[in-house]
Amino acid sequence: MTTARHYLSQLALCAALLAALAAHPVMAQEVSLGRDCAPQLTSMEQRLYQKANEGPDALRNFIFIRRAILQVDTYETAIWAVAVSRARVSCMKRASET
Image 1 (spheres, rainbow, N blue to C red):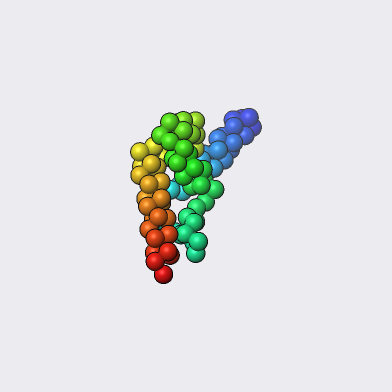
Image 2: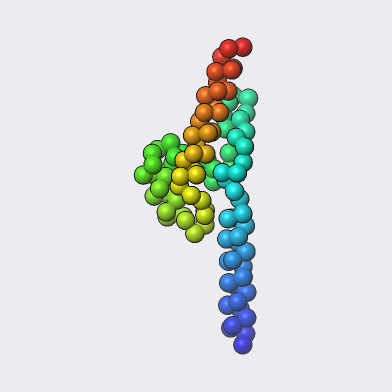
C-alpha cells in the first residue's frame, strides 16, 4: 500500500510541475521592449525567439522535442516571434527619428 501512495504522490508532483510550466502562455503576452529596444523576454521566450529566428525547421524541431512541456503551437510561436521582431524594428525607427 505504501508503494502505491508513494507512486501516486510522485505522479501528482510531476503533474503539478508540468501544469505550472504549461500555464505560462507565451503567445498571449504583449511585447515589452526595454530602453534599448531589446525585447524583455523570459528565458523560455528567449529560446523560442532564438529558434524562430534560426528558421522554421529549427523552431519545429525545438518545439517537437519539448512538446509535452512547452505545449505551444509552432505556427503561433512563429507569428509571435514576427510580432516581437516588428515591435523591435518599430521601436528602433522611433528612437532614430528623435
